[in-house]
Length: 133
Image (tube, rainbow, N blue to C red; front, top):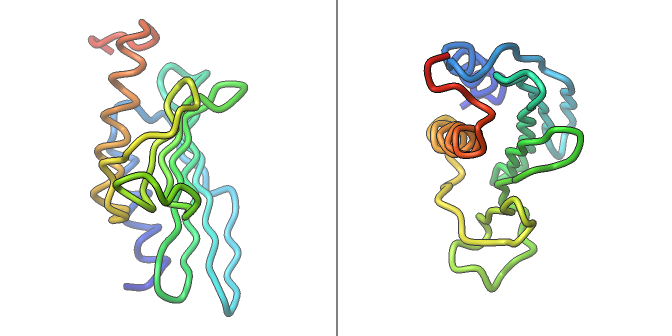
């Protein structure tokens, strides 16, 4: 599938999510060896942001989904630097920056639902997000 088709599908999907107030494609770099995309989502409440970075290599997509407010809060990614984790290369950096197994598979369009659900639960648990919004 064409990389821009995936980005367009992702952005279209994100526009329909109630937790997202705006979306901005911050960076696109298309070269012969790789394609790099960065999408920044402003969340509700607005002080939180979600950065989605996708690097399309020849045979794989390296991804990261990072929630932040002034500094990183939590992140899911598949950079291959934690081989001892059972879900290698997929892993999760929690709010204490402890690296754990990840439920993500690398399928961008299905993984984003899980990520947004986890972020919403984090915001609700920490009383940043009003369920009735």
